[in-house]
Picture 1 (cartoon, each protein chain N blue to C red):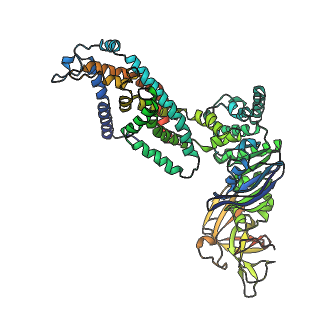
Picture 2 (picture 1 turned 45 degrees about the horizontal axis):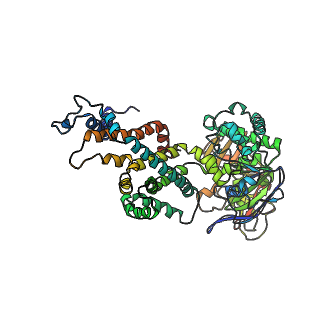
Length: 360
Length: 276
């Protein structure tokens, strides 16, 4: 187990910059999740960490060693791939023991460690099978087993749950979490799924266009997003945004309700309100809407509506669409006016030009 | 969904007609081998000889050094395939995996080389082999066949390697393999069907060659390949077509046997990449 230091790592393909000055310090035993939309550079960063891609500039250290120019096999890391990448011509036991065999471990030790890893993952009855005879979940366990059997300094995981169905994904998510709790191996996990990031990470690194947007623990990331992108990416459904209206005296208001602690001045601001912070019925700031779509999930309802008329329009009708996540609320029907409310103190503010969050 | 009977009938009829067109020459070769010389040109033709001459195969084997020719053909084909596979495994893998400057143009250049007729190379190769003293040696056609086979096998293997996820060798490299180690320990074992199909394709290309053997080996009787040997059975004034046909069947048998033996791999190898 080791800490990882990534110092100003950049990666370019010709004129295309896929990673820009990426720096991150990962503590020993920490679980870091790199999250972002497709093409944000998160998988490239992981491959540079693994040594499968060369950085255009910057330094990578694992423990105290500078591994920037080392081959993947010399970095003492293990990687779990999205498509598992199990060797189809080898049995499960041979797959799991492959890395140890490459390092010249004695046969008895390989057998002992493979058996121990297989038992901890519940795949000991599959050791003689080949990967094609396994289900998706079993393959994923074997891929994890191949990683842990080597007892590496760090685990790198590249969207390991993407190929699983929704139910199995939730199950394996918990298993990987439990595995990390038990082994305490430094882990860098890449995903585009913000739910995985929120549920698994000690700290989340959110990326866009090759740049880090924010590094924070999940609670901070949710409560204090650094900018509009982070605010919209984290949370499901994402945060609602509306241009902030000011009255003649320059006081800011959202849906007719005055917002406290809004900076004075002329600069354009965007208000952000999380769907779960909108409640049914009367409250500190109340407004009436006519739902355009209601998605019932049993315990909660996603109520979609157009922003009330007093909100200045941003042009396209899509930008006025908002969603409220109502938990344990009376049934809401499309087209029937409903009273909703929110606490003005929970409204986030962002600079409309830069997108940066504004402290209140 | 139930298929309508008429299109299905048309499908079967066209399949039968295609098979008949493909199989007829082989059938006629067998008929010619088993017929007496005077029956060969009779009109209307006989579609099966009244007294099949099964002894023709034994006689041809006894009178002509077909065994030697077959050994020479096999050695030439194995040698050419060995060289071609060694070159095209590395070349195909490099074209499939590495972003090399001009790599795409290089691939297209190899593809163009496939389209050149083999006879185009006969004269330059003859010059090279004469200068190196290889005329008359089996090495001449081993090397000549390799030049013919390498473009095909490189392109075939590149296509096969393209279907193998890159994560496999990445996993192997993380597990401690060098890039070449990942190729030999993971990619090649996984590619067995593609390798078998490609090697067999090269084997058949070499086995069916006549032009190179005729040019480089004519004066070295002990090194004649089967195809070259069979053509010498045709006389200037009289040709025993039954013997020539029988020898042709004997020469075709080894390739047929290999096809049947490797069929399982071939189907997998040739259709790889058509589905994911």
